[in-house]
Image (cartoon, rainbow, N blue to C red; front, side, top):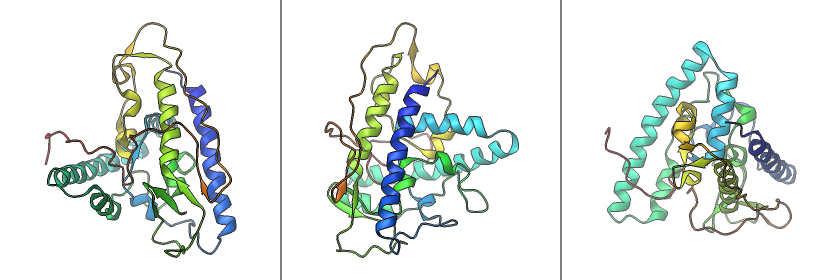
Length: 261
């Protein structure tokens, strides 16, 4: 299927994200420690929205083949198994009454190597890396709680420009919704699916996966969410929603399948 129109909008959004990062770097050059060879963000655990996952999958299939592609997929399979075990642990903790905030803090400290990180500790798809990777080295906030990369020089308790991740997720959801509205599908909630990078690389986003039904698509289109800029906290404006991907990529705490331990 041709999602180029949606991908153009996604790339415009990514350009806004990059501009935000550079604006913070220019204002706080000593605090932003991101540099070639730094790979802390490459071990963070997070999920991708549907539009990010399909975009990354398409770029991966365009750029990789043969032995190189096989090596990435082997790493993806390993990462996916590790992420699965962590999600099972998280779900069990939630069932045992552990507070969501405590669970998310524990998940934030967990590390799973990104399959796109090559043997030279470089991102094999740097130009197409997800939004979370692009913002990792500057302060961000989720649920009113600020956080930043542990290798950065941002001091706790001091005021800094902070990215509102809930608004970032909202914009990505809107793009995912617009993507799904471009065709008829038998699946409900397809636009809310979240997957880790590993699964995004391994999936085959064909008609069967997307539940495509022949016929004209509905003409529902995501609203214009505006753009970022200004203020102490940069936001990507959009209608409020209750459901977002949580930091650490867990999202809603749902029971994973029992196919493996």
